[in-house]
Amino acid sequence: MDKRKKIIEKCGEACALDGSLNIAQKIAHETENLEEIIQKTNNQIPWCGKWILKKNQITSKCIQCGCPLVTNNIVSINSTFCYCSVGWVKLIFETLLKKTIEVKLEKSIGFGDNVCEFIINF
Image 1 (tube, rainbow, N blue to C red):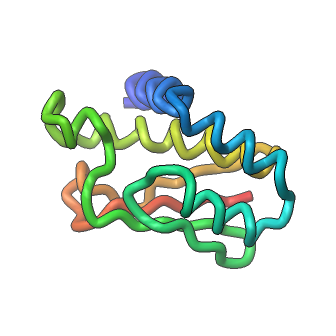
Image 2: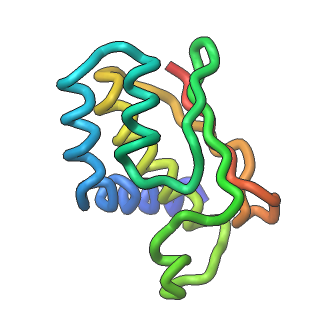
Image 3: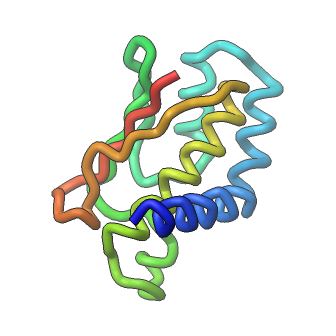
């Protein structure tokens, strides 16, 4: 699973290159204020849920899969594709925060959970 996970995370990074990364770069250039970064990210970068700042973590819960491959019926939801979003989140938030972060996929619809929950530690 580790090999598949790493490959799929790279797919998520590639997906971020399709517009969202440019927006993240713009936000990172405009401000270093963490609350403002989260607000601008929620307003400007399409995502399946809201990002919430909690001390040294940023979290988000999605009540439905936000993957365009799933929403356009190109692939079926499965646990492997959930790591694509991890790669997307990692690249976007490392760009926004200008530092290395850790992304944890706490829950996932693809794993059978009722939500997807992402936790970013920095």
